[in-house]
Structure formats: C-alpha cells, structure tokens
Length: 124
Image 1 (cartoon, helix red, strand yellow):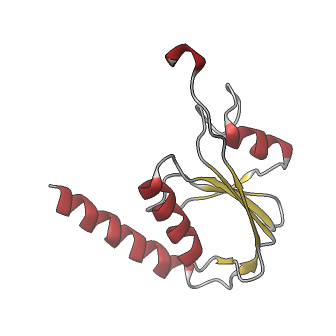
Image 2 (tube, helix red, strand yellow):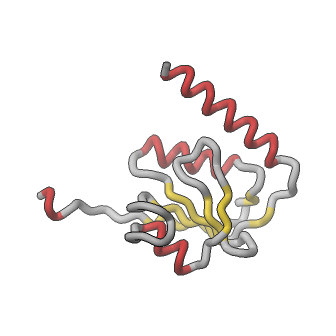
Image 3 (cartoon, helix red, strand yellow):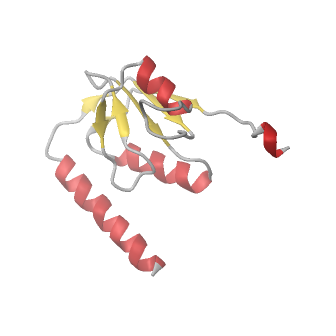
C-alpha cells in the first residue's frame, strides 16, 4: 500500500511540473521556510507561518502537489513562504519540491529558515 501511495505522489508531482512548465518562471528574491503552523495560514491562532503571511501580505497561494504545504507569495511573487513540516523527511521533501518547481526562478533568491526550537512547557 505504501508503494502505491509513493507512486501516486510521484505521478502527481510529474504532472504538476508538466503543467507548470508552460509559463516562464518568475524571479523570487526571498524564500522563507517555516517549520510549523498551528492551524490555518490566516484567521486563527498564529504559529510560525501565519506571522509571515500576515506581516508580508503573502496572499497568493501556489499549490505544491508533493510538498507538505502550499507556497504563499506576495502580489509580485518576489517573496514566497512555505511550511516545511517538522522532521528531516518532510523538510527535505518540501524544499526539494519547491526547488524543482519550474514556476519559480530561485537562482538569485535569499533563503531564510525561520524555525524555532522549543518544547511545550506543560510537557516537561
């Protein structure tokens, strides 16, 4: 069953890249990577990601088929942000999918990893 899941995700990734390849990539200046979001990207209790979405007005949503979370961008697409998820596997997969997406020209982008390290105080 796991192989079927991986195969379907790979197929969705390839199809998504084929559809996105028709448009010329736009230059991105800043990529913000956050590790988690408590709920929705806007309108509820904020986590790491929501502060970036609200503060930088990242209102455009660009779905990434095989990534942990969709990419949000500002009006001209020069600043984008996404949630990579916690853990090596989720973060590696999300960054790889973002880096390989032909919609984004990341060749001159600055990368900002905005993750916190901490524990819930009630779990000590």
